Image 1: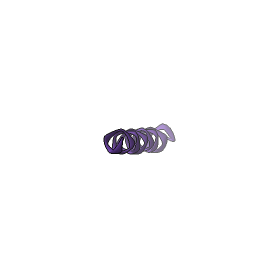
Image 2: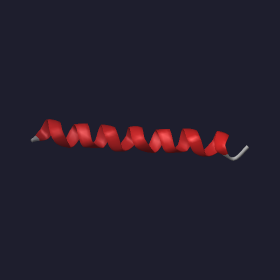
Image 3: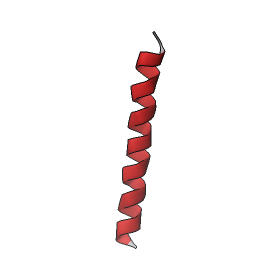
Length: 28
C-alpha cells in the first residue's frame, strides 16, 4: 500500500533532479 505512494514520489524526485541537471548543462 505504501509503495503506491512512494514510487510516484521517487519518480517525481528523479524527474525534478534530471530537469535541474539539464537546465544547468544548457546554461554552460
